[in-house]
Length: 252
Image 1 (cartoon, rainbow, N blue to C red):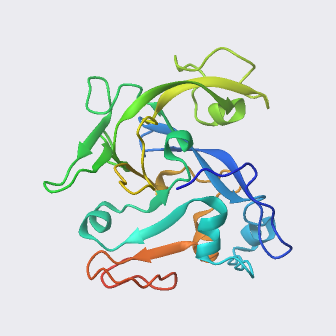
Image 2 (image 1 turned 90 degrees about the vertical axis):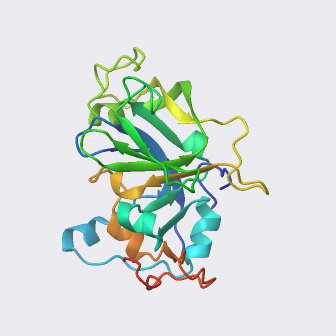
Image 3 (image 1 turned 30 degrees about the vertical axis):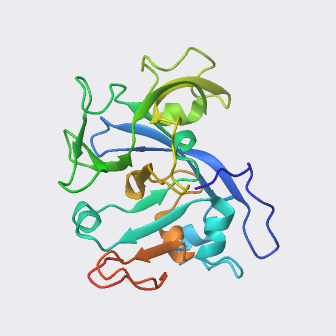
């Protein structure tokens, strides 16, 4: 997925302006915490829609192809047995090394001190990482993670994550302020990362259901109701692109 500007592309009167901004996510027991940068419409779901609990309307001129073009992201559900059994709701980020930062644990997966356990199919290269304590499946990757320093994050976001006392948060303004602080974490290794080129030797997919709820502009219902979720067929490999109904044995 290609990197795009901030904010992403000017909108017409009928289409949204997509803004790149950080959202925090975690496993159920909070031993795994991360930040991800997602492009979503400015303002997110309308207050009226959330208050009335009514579906949000689709944007008149924004179908799933235009959503991918405008954001560089893909959101989909696959009917293969791996994705189905693991309950993985794919979010393919615009620029994985830049758009994902694992803040806890800081030990690399598989090493001592890491609460992440990989599952690898016998015939596959992808590692599907779970929290070792609560079993939440968080992300899948072909490639390596590397330590990244000097990432600027809104102090308010860190406060919401309960990271006031974490050792990898550099001293700075109060966490409740609107200022930014500098953090370190683990991201997909940028050197040699190829998720879209001819070789496609790299892959990263975040389980979208692990993004924490009740954050401004983020509502899983909106993503579904706007028609941005694709359904992929990994059983019969049908080329049909669907947004209205899963392929056979798939889930909504």
